[in-house]
Amino acid sequence: MVIAIRVYELGGPEVLKWEDVKIGDPKEGEIRVKNKAIGVNFIVIYFRTGVYKVPEIPYTLGTEAVGVVIAIRAGMCDLTIGDVVYHLGSATGTYAEEQIVLADKEMPLPPIDPLVVASAMVKGLNARFIVRTWFKNIHSQPKVTEELESQTQELSEEDTTPNDVEASSRSNSYVEQGHKVVVNTAVGGVWSLLCQWENMLGAIVIGTVSTKEKALQAKEDGCHHVILYKEKDLVTRVVEITSEEGVDVVFDSVGKDTFQGSLACLKHRGYMVSYGQSSGTPDPVSLSSLATESLFLTRPSVRTSAFSKDEMHEAMKEVLANVASGTLRVRVNHIYPLSQATQAHADMAGRKTSGSIVLIPDGVEQ
Ligand SMILES: NC(=O)c1ccc[n+]([C@@H]2O[C@H](COP(=O)([O-])OP(=O)(O)OC[C@H]3O[C@@H](n4cnc5c(N)ncnc54)[C@H](OP(=O)(O)O)[C@@H]3O)[C@@H](O)[C@H]2O)c1
Image 1 (cartoon, rainbow, N blue to C red):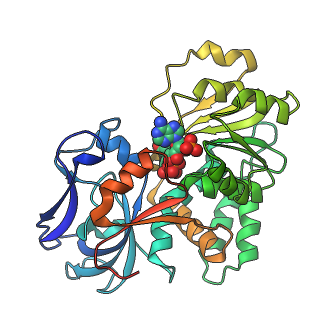
Image 2 (cartoon, protein in one colour):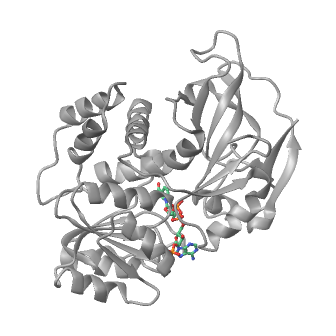
């Protein structure tokens, strides 16, 4: 038996139950992993509350973890016992001391602290797809695909140096030098990394936050302007900052409370990337409301962004390379024992967290 955090009904953090589960031996194509660090992402709140559907109830929460391989179905994969691997689940399973996972979903890791990998992977993938994919600069031509492929291959080489990584991160991106971007809000696990990456690309980054403490972090992460959006009107400030022009793109993950304001920040032919709904699902938008400034609107998901498993793996390697080189500074701001997952959820939903949140199975040394 192993300990896992299980959910039997939709609801608040109190529905998380700490209990023994039997997981058995790996079957064909599976391995058994002992988790060392478990990444916490806002999406688990959507699953827990029913905004997104889970395949079945009851279920074990959690989307990503780093663990050690402790059992393998003989001859089924290239991994060996003791390998440290990263695994990205579909929606469930990682809030557990141990779990069974499909061998082909595992990714062997370079020697980076498991805590950092669990803090960085999903968040970094989001930032990576944002700067490379989800805002298409229609004022200049995007780079060709072959060039992007060769850059990505370079990043997978072991001898990649920090300068290589930074140079590559600057090229082949749709966010470019001089673009004005709004990141709404700026200090969560995804957004801390995104602000750093956009700043590195030369964008003028405008971040929103709810408190002065969060504003300090946003500045450190490369926001040129920080708006305390509970105190100041977002649109008024963006109009001032951009001398009435508006911004090229808004990345909005707050949803209901900010969606209309975010749209109003855009310049002519600007891009609205609606990216999440931490305050609730945005109200429906009439298509004709986009026509006044010929705006673009997209609602991407990191899970469906890649064309193939290979593309996703290349993106993961790029994130790891950027983390290993220090190009992206991962903020492991909150570490909870797995047994305190309820508290972690309450703090995240209560807007008390910033940067990344990680759960460590009780008794596992960091
Ligand atoms: N599309 C995708 O594929 C994808 C992937 C990953 C994440 N996301 C989205 O990105 C967002 C944040 O992800 P994250 O993991 O980095 O979390 P996070 O930013 O650490 O947490 C959410 C933040 O949203 C703000 N917020 C505003 N209204 C809120 C409310 N009513 N309740 C709770 N928070 C509220 C808070 O910042 P302030 O206190 O500063 O307002 C809070 O810290 C989520 O909306 C998530 O769905 C989308």
